[in-house]
Image (spheres, rainbow, N blue to C red):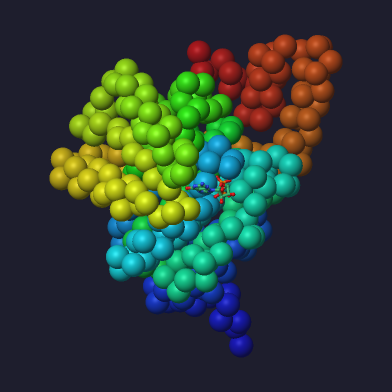
Length: 336
Ligand code: GDP
């Protein structure tokens, strides 16, 4: 008898019923690099995609210690109180580089992770950042099919993961600390430009005044950026994830953005553009993987890498040689 775990309908039915166990298993398949798993995951994704409901996709970033997990716990619990279902997915570039994780997956968001209406999935490791983000995009679709109407993608404010997360969410939220507005807290200005909203956390106790001052500073700084074509002007708010204040206002900002973007067609446009960008990224990712899965091609590449390293060939000469070895002598000429 065929093991039912190996059939796509087992996964598709389970996901559509909102079964968390099956959803977790399906995500593991999506993240697998085994050929059989990849084929099964393609069938699952195809099976659920026609059923996928739309959700609000929110990216959250900020330096370690700013309060991301405390905020998500408090924000998620608030939303569940409003009748929503929350999925939290993480992208942690550090976990891919060192095997260690800045987001410290296991112990975070304790009460949310025990909530029936929440699903929390840590960052996949052992992969390139590009690979991880491709998986996260697919995981968003699986979570939507399982009925999660608010998807949070969390990342740390270091490395290039912000740009990748920006490319898969509707609203990009930057968490900041009070009182350190002058030096941008190690967050590059580029990340501020990507944000749809800035939330200054830890606005409590002695920090409340500082947080209000930082809000004014950031509002002024945001005025310097040009307005997005969607018609949305980025907002700055304060909150205390610890004391549960400002959480409703944070959600209000995201809901206003969603309403504006839905009504003026910008959300539809954004998601179509994101899909196209995803496809383009996938072309490079998939083709490169395919080409170098072949031993001979991989050897040729390794050999040329050594020659570039030793200075025997320039990178450009090596690319010409590699292209000719892979696609024939005339392949480079025909591109001219
Ligand atoms: P993350 O690394 O960004 O996920 O940050 P955490 O959520 O782990 O929080 C880092 C530290 O800041 C913890 O000790 C939290 O208790 C504390 N913290 C988080 N949010 C607040 C807040 O709103 N106010 C105060 N005073 N402390 C907070």
